[in-house]
Image (cartoon, rainbow, N blue to C red; front, side, top):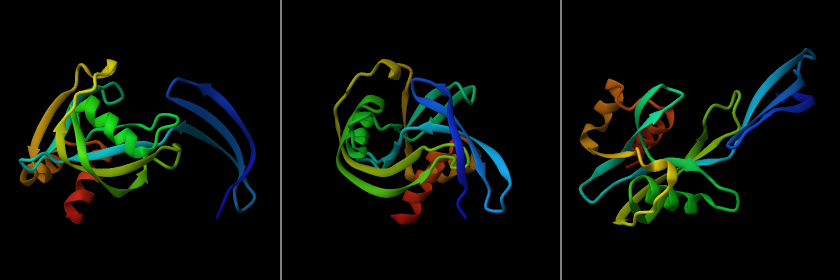
Length: 174
C-alpha cells in the first residue's frame, strides 16, 4: 500500500546526508508528514583473517556517545561501486585488501525514516595493504575468534545493528 507524495522539500543539506520532509496521503485518504534522511548506500563487511578471526574495529561513535566494536563499513562514494568501496574501506580501516569478496545480500538501515541501503559482504584471503585516510587514526583493529563472536553479541560488546546483522548472517550461512 503505497503512500502518495503531495509535496516534498529539503529541510537540511549536509555533507553526508540531507533531510527531506514529505507531505503524503495515506491509502485511506488521511494526510500525514514523513521526515526522511537521504543517505547514500553503504557497505558492511565481515573480514575473516587467516587464523579464522573476524576483524572488528573499535572506534568512538558520537551518536552512541562511546566506543563501539563494529565490522568495517563505509559509504559508497559517487562513481564508486560497492566492491570498490569494500576494498577502500578495508584498506583504510583494517589495513588489508581482500583477494576474495563474496556478496551476502543487504538490508535497509532504518527504512522508516532513512534511505540508506547496506550491501553486505564477506572478505577473505586478506593481504596487508594500508591506505591512510584522515578520519581513521583512532580506529583500533580487534581480531575476535569466530567461536567467541556470538558471546560478544549476547554480552552487548557488539551492539550496532549492521555488525549484529552481518555477523549473524555470516554465522548462519557458513
